[in-house]
Each structure stands twice: as C-alpha cells, then as structure tokens.
Image (tube, rainbow, N blue to C red; front, side, top):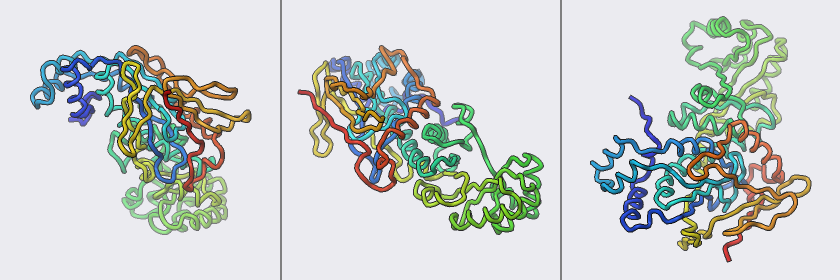
Length: 429
C-alpha cells in the first residue's frame, strides 16, 4: 500500500464547488488570469526564493482525474454529473508564465501567472500553492544558510524531521539553494543530487566499544568516510578514530555540545595527531544563525536538518493565488489588509551598470519602460497547454547564485530589515 495519489486530488472541495457553480451558470470558460504573489515576507527576511516551478510544471502536465477519483467524488456528493463529466475530460489548455526558478521575489512580485478558462485555472489553485509555498520556503531558508556558511559545504539531512514526500522536495529545494549534498537517496535518484552520509550513534552503541565500531566502518567503507566521534567523549573519540583509520581519515563529525569550542579543540587535537587534512563536520540544530556563529571556527562542513526542512521558522512562503483579470478587465479584491492590484502584471528588475539590482518595477496591464540594464523577470512555461520550458535543477541552482550576487550586500544580512530591493507596483490606469 502507498500514500501516493494523483495531483488532481489535491484540489480543495471549495475549488470543485466553484467549478460546479461556474459550469452551471455559464462562467466556467470566461478567460481569466490568476497570479501568485506574496503580500509580505516572513518576519526578518529580506528576500524570498521562488522555487518549485520545475516540479510544478510536471505535476500540471500529469494533472488528470482518474475514474476511481471521480467515482469517489460522485459517491461523496461533492460533484454532480455535469462536473464529473468535465473532470473526466480535464486537460489544462491555458498559459503559465512566471519568474525563473531560483529567482528572488519580494512583496508584490508576480511570481506565477496562470491564464485560461476560469474553471481550468481555479482547479489548479491548491496544487500550485502547495508546491510553491513549500519549495519556496525551504529554498529561502536554505539560501540564507548557504550565505552564512561562506562557501563551506552544507549537507541536507532533514528527512527524519518531515513527511516522507516533503523530504524529497525539501532536498531538491535545498540543493537548488546551494547545499552541496543530501542524505536523501530518493532525491538523489529522482533529481541527480549528490548524496552523502556519515554514521549514527546507534552503530557505535551496537559494538562492544568505539574502536570496534570505527574499525568496522572503515573496513566496510575505507578511509574516505566520516566517523561520528561524540557518542562518548569527543577527544577520546578523535583519538580512537585516528588510531583506527590513520591520519588520512576523510572526516569526523560532531553532533552535540558547544560546537564553537569543540571545533577549535578538535582541530588542535587532529593536527597534533598528524591528521591535518581530516575535515570537521558539525551538525545538530543547525540554522543560519548557528552557522553564522561558527564562521570564524575551524569547521569544514555543516549538516542541517530540522531547520531547513521547516523553513527555519517560516514553513510557508505565504504565497496566495488571486484572480486579477476576467475577459481583459482588471478585477480587485478590496478586503481590509488583503486588497489586491487588478490586472495581469509584467515585471522587470532594474540594475546599475555594475550589475547590482536597485528596484523591481511591476506594471499592471502594460509593459514597464525599458532602460539599459533592466531584466524581464517572467518567462513562458506553458502555452496553450503545452510545456514550453521546464527548468533543470542545475539551471535553477545557477540562476539563484547569480541573483544573490546581484542584490546589495545589505540584503544578505540575517538581521531584520527592509526587502533587499524595493518593489514599485504601477496599477492599471
């Protein structure tokens, strides 16, 4: 038995209620435009990372209601015969445009634009928000950790701290953000992400003593492995590791204690034992702040788990999916604190001649005045229901790296502050 299900059943019941009502009153096929954007960034954040488009496009391509699923909906009284027949024939035939995967976003950025018949677009709402909110939250947190690491590699090891399917998506988003490897083998198989692993305290405890555990691991994996040295006493663990593996052991991992002090002492001890090339990997509740505090310490690599797969305190990107245009007419929501700007948006990122981003311009039902060094932010993903472009993970990873280079250095700070660049939204006239 498996928990896998088709993307179609991610549709909310109220989404199908809207479809049924629109089919009945004849508005289901009105040409509509929906946009995905964030009203605000999570507290303390200066940018967000748009992620998940690569996964999303594939899911929309396969978005079909099976006979079994339609039978369930009919028996549960969720849809009538007319809606059931519409679902049986469902294929998305509209257009999807949006920011490149790995692009930075800010409040008001039109990250994704979905246009087509009202019903065919509204039925995708939950799937779109589920994917983009999750992956963007993980990538945004992971990018901050990568910045804090200052070029030192980070291993994604959060699979045991989240849902089994979210773990694979999290590994992908973290790698997109610049993590070096993952411990999740499913992510390695599905997305080609480099995988790595060390050992567990349970393996050490299994053996009669620590040297026996280390000897077993080295015998199986060779010296190009990482020995976990904090099961008992860290200093003695390091001595045992080098005694068993020799001074050319690849790495030791420390998973507990005052990592700043322990990293210093461990480096000194390893050097005294002749293991000057043996790396030190630290893990244990690593987030961007913990990583930043170790910037001056002799740490060679980090392992991040819980913080990265939970968005480091911001488990959702706060993205919404709103109707902004019907049959070419701008429509707006006027609810207090939730008002929207009507009309389909076009966005550009403005830069200095040096390449530093200075502003994002968003225009409703028009095109921004183009200046030298401006960059158009949206691209076509799907046209008339056919995939135009599906970004590769390598392309998305490189795109984010370039984006982070382009924003002012203040935007990379971990402290609370204004968005890295301002966004100017020009409403329809």
